[in-house]
Amino acid sequence: MTSITFHPMTKKLAIESLRFAYEPPYDFYNVAVNEENVKERLDGSYVAAFVGENLIGFYCTGPSARVPAGYPFGAYERRCTDIGVGLKPSWTGQGKGTPFFKAVLDEVEKDSESCLRLSVATFNRRAIRLYSRMGFEADQAFYSGPDKFITMVREATGKKE
Image 1 (cartoon, rainbow, N blue to C red):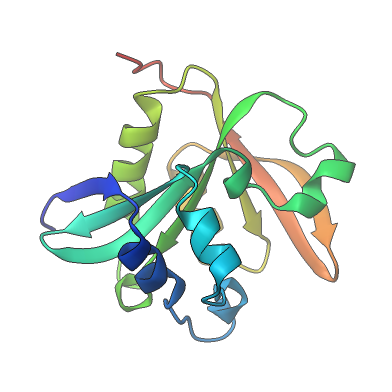
Image 2 (cartoon, rainbow, N blue to C red):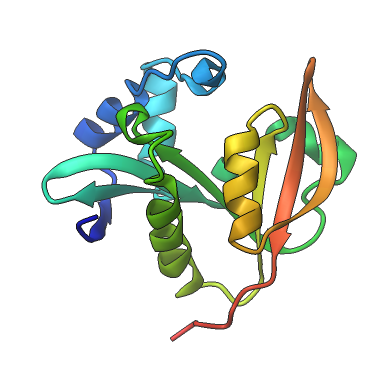
């Protein structure tokens, strides 16, 4: 696969990424294109991922990467860098998630000295397998309504420059 580059999120890219439409059961991750969601994507915590001129996904860090329902369960008490990722639907299920996620980790770890943490819905076995292969381990479980989530944690590799 061609190299992945990262660029600041713009309004145009925010709207394009919010239009990612996943098939069931991954439609759980579909997000409405509205002013509030565009504003969140532009808050400085989101970064767009490209191959060539094509938007292939994004990542976010910090509170934007957390599931709010996890707070009462203590899921975010440990100080970690939270990461959220979104891969364009046409890129999923083809083995492209591994190089994408590796590139995201390389980018995030440049600025992280703490552990890394992901929050993932437990039905998303595909993502959990990927995260496990990259050294993440299940940590906390919690519910958001009827949906069960887990956090997965990995110690940072200390790449901070």
